[in-house]
Amino acid sequence: MKAKWIITSWLLILGLPAPGASDRPIRPSNKPWAGVEQELLEKGIPTDTSSVVKVALTNSDEGVRWAAVELLGLRGEVSTKSSLRKILLNDSSQLVRETAALALARLKEPSGLKTLKNFMLDAEDPERQLFLATRLAELGELSGYQQIVKAATCKDEHLRFLSVESVALMLTSNRTLPKPDPADLLVQMMSDGSSEVRKEVILQLSAAFFNGVSLRPYLQNIERIAKEDPDAEVRRQAATLLISLQEFGKHRSEK
Image 1 (cartoon, one colour):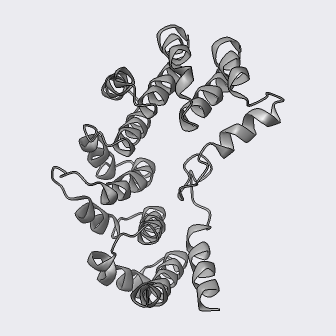
Image 2 (image 1 turned 90 degrees about the vertical axis):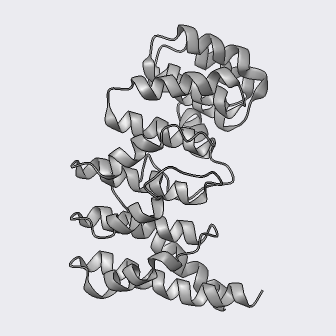
């Protein structure tokens, strides 16, 4: 019964809607390609490897080609490397070429990682630069960490909001990070002037906790937010996280 309550509490925290949640999933999935695969199926496109490769190479719709390339990378379709290289070199869409580089990087192709880094450095849109820096970090390449820091500390509220997931991702990195420490950044963002940013920090800390990250460095601030935050929704989420910390913490210690 306790385990069921703990899971329910977790879902209450992580299942709450937040700006950008539709294109930036908070929780990892054991099938991270499920959404993009479904997108292709809804358009009547078969998702076997040969069909997806054909679509990625020839479809006239940029969005469809993007979805096909993303699917190949997420599914780990190693046999499609040569097709992805063609797309990287020849596709007319910058988005599709970037996604092909990301797919190749996910497939452990050295040229994909190198090209992806160049795309990040050349990106003029701060949101796209943040996105590419975050994808690189997921692959263990931290050359974009300063781009993440820049987004987390900028004046643009929406960009700060988007950066929270990226900063939280750094908590699970096994590599030594340059300053500032991501934990310090998150603590700073817990006092952000935007309630959406503060709410997103709680959501991402919740996800981090259930992925094994200790929240001890944040406990005092979570308690403060639960009691004092001017936004009732942020207070509620923080309070729910505190309950989960208490209950799930006990569950861990009993193992």
